[in-house]
Length: 361
Image 1 (tube, rainbow, N blue to C red):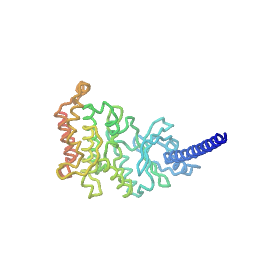
Image 2 (image 1 turned 180 degrees about the vertical axis):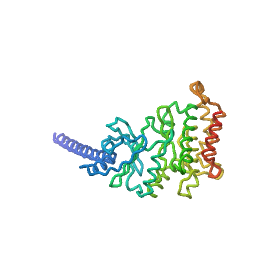
Image 3 (image 1 turned 135 degrees about the horizontal axis):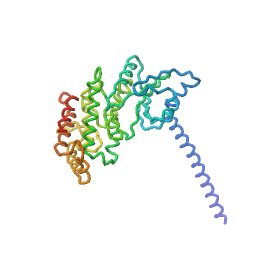
Image 4 (image 1 turned 30 degrees about the vertical axis):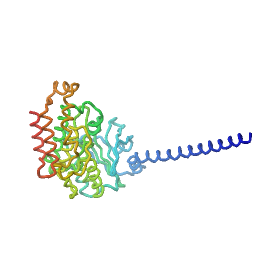
């Protein structure tokens, strides 16, 4: 009997200890979750502090398509975090007064540079308009250094999600080719259609947004110019780890028109292969600074996909760009030319568009 009471006592103590641990764990994780939520709403918290008592400064600049924006729209907009990086946070926000959904990009003050050149660049980016570029609708600059860029929101997400999200549409040649044409058109406008060339500097499939009809829109162009040198370099290194960094950037720090072309070539290979580019160090017998799978398997895989019996009819029926093996091969060759290890051997964007038009014929 005594042993039975001792057992009950031990079990009681263990139960109490477990209960205490569970309670402490609950409060710990609740505190962490609360802190995380507060970080996710950092732009709202910061902006509302500046807006209390009507003492905030009206530092909101609007551009074409954003004329109805107000600071209060931004202050009161519930934001859902859809992306984070070292230099900022992306929010899907509902502007309640107009019932419109916008993409809000919060740039952390410690990562940006604020001078006259910064203001001039914002004016430049706000004036750029093209059917395949994400427009800047507005820019808010707060007195505490907060920076907020307002863009349209695109419901289909980004190209990387589309390619690797199991969407059968990503296997259709008509859509693959149409997206390629659209990205090239947007990049052409940046390189040749503005007062002076605008280097993207961070072109990748995650920065290509899609609308409901799979029309592509290039985002983030010129963003690296808004960041201080440290943050801009970190952004470049992040892009390098994802496979988009041209080989000459190992020794050079500044992006160029040629490095944009390299990144575009990688995106074409993504569209053809359906795979994520992973940057690897080339071996001496390799001709291109690219992962092996993109040279050795991309054609066989894409041809097999596009000629699959279930997709062949949808690929060729009632489409402007019917699929042929020759067209796939030409797009692959163009992608590889864009990814040449020598910048001087890469085609410029005008030559890229001409090659794409030849594929259509």
